[in-house]
Amino acid sequence: MKNNTIISQNSMNLMVYFILACAVSWAIAIPLALTNQGMIQPVFPQWVHYFVSYGPMLSALIVTWATQGAQGLKELWGRITLWRVGGIWWLAALSPLVIGFVAVLAINLFTDNKISLSELGLVPFLPPLGIGALFLWILTSGIGEEIGWRGYALPRLQKDHNALYSTLILTLLWALWHLPLFFYLFDPAVAPGWVFALYAGAIVFTWLSNSTAGSIPIVAVFHGCFNYMTSANAGNGLLATVVSMMVMVWAVVVVVVYRPKTLSSKGKFVV
Image 1: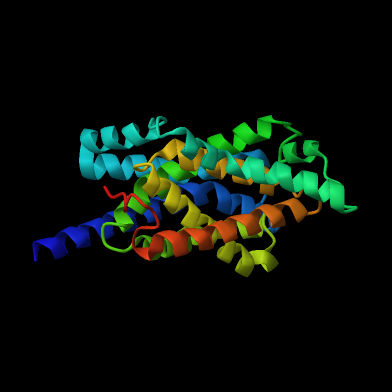
Image 2 (image 1 turned 120 degrees about the vertical axis):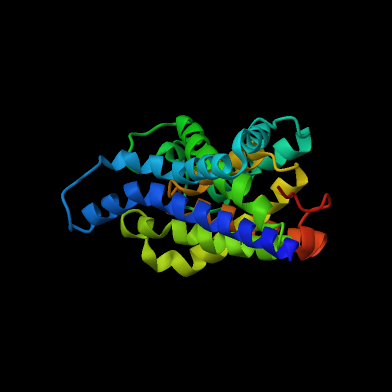
């Protein structure tokens, strides 16, 4: 009976976390979507979109403080600052850059669809940022989202489920969180393939998190580097397609090699 109570409380905390993450993010995203659809006058400038990413982070901090107090925040902060995880994991975190630059070289050598690296600095709603776009993605989608998704939610989902099923649940919630963006930023036609790619990426995130004792910088940097390579529509989307396909292959390898139970040689990381 006691174990059932613990699981129920864990699930309740996760539900509160997700609802709050959506509430904070959608308070910005929904007005942007309604404005884009011509239903209301502008409430925010479009660049405020980048603050949508901080909903998961704020929710994680609030729910952790409410349920675990200072000790819970201390544990979370320990993983926010967990940089010393070994060079191999930093190489993995930076790998979307390596994959992307190799892809650019190959595309430019073997196709007529030439890609300029300056295209990677083109982001929605802002002037060209050059290499600054990389740091924008790390600080928004990376830090803002990953303190929530892999910092708070994943370790708690893995208390009750195997790593692959936990990743599936998290992917569905993560996809739903993105929903308003399909009304002002994303093309709804790509949604089915996008969800599949999101699941593949989430598997790689789980592998990185479980392999590094829940290090948030590792997954945040990977997330930011991936977005830098895939969000600028470089080469009319060809670069994003190539990098996404490589991550999908990577996800399959992780599942085959490490098996669904842990998706890591070091077991599941739980809190």
